[in-house]
Length: 170
Image 1 (tube, rainbow, N blue to C red):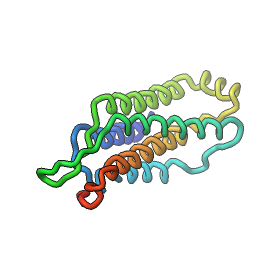
Image 2: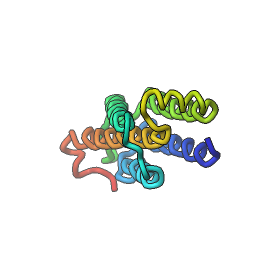
Image 3: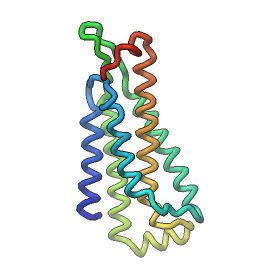
Image 4: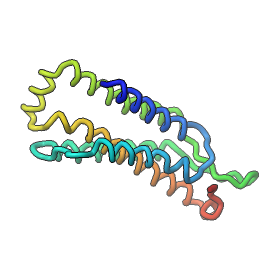
């Protein structure tokens, strides 16, 4: 991996962890920041995505996996309204950080394997009819599905209590 990929991977992980871990006041900026970061990476890296052979299946599988991970992250979080200060808080426990860490470490391990074992990776991709250029889009689409499901789930949890709808922070 290049230095810029290392920096972007670590930065994305850091922002996701800092913006979501623990008990944080719910607001639109904190909720949509991961979507904005995802938008940047999607605009940067989702160009000329190979879809021939088994690439389409890998892309679809990555979206489904990302959505499932996002659902688990939603299930591991909760929203609560604090009547003393009128704010809605979202609580994310340490297990969610472990899941995010696993996803990002998995990405790094796979990219490093392909980088340092190019012949084996190329041979595997030819045998299974997919292009190695699909790996970047796979991770972006997986992260995208994970983030979108997580953000939508958090909004649903916050809005589940009718008193929270009009009391969300700006």
